[in-house]
Image (cartoon, helix red, strand yellow):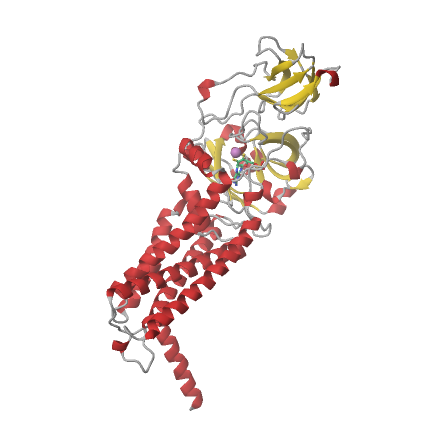
Length: 544
Ligand SMILES: Nc1nc2c(c(=O)[nH]1)N[C@H]1C(S)=C(S)[C@@H](COP(=O)(O)O)O[C@H]1N2
Ligand SMILES: [Mo]
């Protein structure tokens, strides 16, 4: 009997959670306030759920992938202008996530108002049908459509299909959390205590008191969310995205922890090797899937290659050189037998980043799927467990956290290509002065033998055959010494002792000649989104 009674109580309690019957007559202003509060609260709970999924399980929540989805619509001009206005890529990412969180809470509040006026007065089961349709199914369909292209994201490294399923499961969880928090918190506030009659509610202190309690609970949830945001902030890319390698410290091979770094992500993937697969799909006869062990068991090559970002300024350090070990991409492609229509490859990272290059380049023996960098396994931030190394092309084509190689027709585009970067992604020839610093000052008596200059020069996959320095605005050029010749696929390190003719302000310019004998020049025909061309120049002051 007692047991039955308790079971009944639990049943009643569960039923009361799922189906609310409270009907109240309260004023419009109060309705608005209560709806807004319940909606904002539910928006916060949903945000907390998303943050937890992101932080604990590497699940792609809208917080991370909405930015990815929207950024392809921002052309490079406005993109750079915006980036400049908010103070860099990192600030832009922070602003993006911040506005999405506020947006979610705002949309939640609007949903709450809708609920308070239109849905709460409905009888059951109509009400639940409506709340499920409007607050769970509708956002699910909207997200599936709006975020379709970026659903296959997993910061743990799941392949595309399970990654998409997980992302979707995360959406469901988040929207159910929203719907339940909204309905239950609203109901809890407006429901009279058993002793109260419905008419008393409007004037009874219960509603007000409960609203205050819910506000306090909201603050707690916000505090929890803030705590997770702080944790995410610690592992976020803000501390290292845009790391440059330049100046006096530059050596032939860049140590892994000094290698320049660029990523589109707020938090980079941390791939679990046991979950990770490399898939070869698209226009192939034989789809292939490689686990990391199988990839590593294939014949590999070791190859020194320099990478440089398309957005690297003439004097900037988004450029580094390493020895990569990996499998030539052509071996993987041959095993999959590309179909005749395949003209390009599109390479996908687990972070839903993608980029393309011609199949011909993919079949070049120097194009690698690399898993080692300077004798160590690939560091997480450089694409663990595998990345593409494609000599001659800008850094963006060297896809990190590689998970899928898709053979495509000519129309396929990558992340930055969709934004409108390019059309030329071949690295132009350039040279940089690392020493002395720009605006350095010397006393002639301290430099009886001349001013020592040092720097790097790089010509994509064409090699550098010569470096020259001019101290008279390019009228006369003197040949520098190549101290580190590297290979055809790398930069060189050069040095030169400059003998100034006297005191004053001097401008020094450097230029390189590539392996085919083409002298570096300003390539105006490239347009503004295919990389910077021109000459690096520094100013040096000499006193007697
Ligand atoms: N998956 C993935 N790969 C990526 C990127 C990215 O955001 N995601 N950024 C690209 C860009 S723009 C550059 S310049 C290089 C930088 O490589 P690094 O950080 O190892 O130097 O990685 C490229 N590969
Ligand atoms: Mo880049």
